[in-house]
Structure formats: structure tokens, C-alpha cells
Image (cartoon, rainbow, N blue to C red; front, side):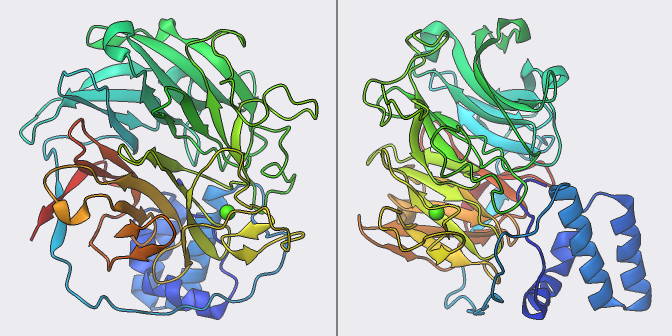
Length: 439
Ligand SMILES: [Ca+2]
């Protein structure tokens, strides 16, 4: 699965996992785990089977090692029931449409009322933005060159700000040939579809492990393309890539797709390490990230909101600014993880939560700027892949206040927006797109 890979290390944590046991089982595809589920039902060996099941999950997610670099103390779980009944619900936005492991959702800002869903296997589907839409069509199919499964695949899509005129769009995918790498590439649309042979690769970088590939890309208001990369995977960033500014791993990158000084792209002239003599990568915009799976820009304030998936304890939301260090793996959220966490240059999350009742894998969301739900105007909607909980964060420029749970979408892999700023949520497990509705 996309995000879940937290070792179960304490009975306290086990208790929480056991409470959400049913949810987990829905997403364990391998036959061994299904067999164990039956064993549980038949024999009632709940605790033992839960342990085995979670281990199955870990083996699927991180086939290398998930042992943390430092011991962790048991997570303190504070169970706080919602103080008010949610007045919103998640409803299917396109009831007739189902996608294969959807991971990204966006529009082309080209006035066509089309929406695009990225399927992890390497396909981009296009469809009309209407609740009555009955058909989708393949916009791009590069599944033959994409290595998909676990945390790999076609992971992100961003349309050029001038897509309407130039037809360019950009993707982030993983491949196994010639070796395991992330590929950042441009394609060109021709009418309703895009030719897979129109690919122009901007750059690639090796992936030491299969997990933590980041995956999002998006254009900022500055016209530059931002790309989130994970720390390269395994667990605990064993090679310390996120703090290493000579590596593209564990970073937010920023490039100029309209210049050609590096082939099919260039470096913005005010990137933090332009012309440096220390061997730092000029593409780096910010660093110290673990697995910034989803990020987005507030279209009004231009803030760059990012959800950074945690290791064993803390899920965090960051607002990314140029040249900043977001701490991993010195810190996990605001907790010390490994190394000198007394250093003062580390930027704390604007919001974080302990792994437990709220979930175990944050899914970064979007700042609501639509017209249907003014309760949420200017608030950051985000959620958790494991718990399915969705919250709204209110940010005053200094601190964040979290709402009660708004609604729940199981295995939420991404949030997206249409051209009107309305918000959508992807259920990775059932392949459906949801939107909000008042109860
Ligand atoms: Ca951090």
C-alpha cells in the first residue's frame, strides 16, 4: 500500500491497531492474510492474528527493513471522541466511474471542464466534470514503462500553466529499467489524448529502496514546477539522504520548465543553491523531508502545504519555504529521532499528530477556495490514509487550530480540486472519487 509501514512495537499500539483491525484487513491483498482473517473469525484468536496481519502489511510495504534507527518509546494514545456530530459527509462525486488505484486528481485549467485521475499502474483517465458522467477515456497510457505496486507507480501529474496553448504536462513515475529510478518527464497532448512517444525526460534519480518515492508535482504561482521526493525508503533513512543536500532524495525541488540550461529544463535563478561550490543540488528548494506524498498550493496565499508521512510516532503538516530544513531524520515532527536535535535551523511542523487514534499516515490535502462550502474557505483540508479521518486546519500565519473530524474516506490517497476550487477525495481501495456534502 501507499503509506502504511509502521512497526508494531508495543502492546499499547497493538491495542489501537486491534481496534481498527477490520479496516486494515480490507487492504491486505495477499492470500495468506485473507486466510488469517478467516482463522480469526473461526477461532477467535484475535490478538495473535492481528499481530500476524500487521506483519503481513509491513512485509508488503517495506520488503527491505523497517527497523528504526533509534528505539522509540511507546506511543501515548489519547482517545478524544468528537465533541460535535459531523454535519458533512463524503458522497460519490462521479457514481458511474471507478478507477484503478487512484493516486492523483487535477484539472488542466484549459476551460474544457475535463478532470484527470492518475491511476498508479501508469494510466491517466480523463472525464467530464459532471455527477452524471458515465464514461472516462484514457488520456495517457505509459503502463508499459512504469514500475507499479507498493509505493511505486505513476504518482503525480501537473499541467503546464499554458497547457491550453502548448499541450505540455508533467508526470512523476518510477521505473525498473534500466534500474529502479524516479522519472520526471514531460508529455504533449494532442486533442483528447497524449501520445506516449511524446515523452521528454527532464531528469531521473535512482531509488535505493522501493518505498518513500514522494510523487507529487505542481506548478507554483511563480510558474516553476515543484517536485516532492521521498528519502529513498527503507526505514529511518539509513543513508541520511534527506539531510544530504548533494542528493535529490528527501527534498522539495523546484525547476524552470521553460528554459533549457539543463537540457529539458533549467534552474530558477533564485533557487537556494544556484552556483554553489559545495556540491549541493541546484534543484533543491527545501530539504529534510521523509515522504512528502502529497502537497498543494493555496491559490490565494500561495502557501505550499505539505503532508510528510512519519516513521513510528508523528505525522506532520509543513508549510514549505525556500531553503528551509524540515528536520528529518534529526527530528520526526517535533520529536527527536536521530542525531543532534538541539540544532536551531530545523523548521517545526505547523501541525502534527501522534500515531494512534487519529491515524498512522497523513495524506496532505488542499486549502479550500471553492464556493459550495464557505465553512471551509481558507482552511486546509487533510486526512489520514489509515484512519480515513478528514480534518480542516485553520492557520492564522502562526499557529494551527484543528477541527473535529469532518467526515471519513477510507484509504484516502489524495485530495484534488477542480477549476472552481471544489474539493475531491480519492479512495485508493475502492477506486471511487468523493466530494463533500452537507448531511
Ligand atoms: Ca519534519
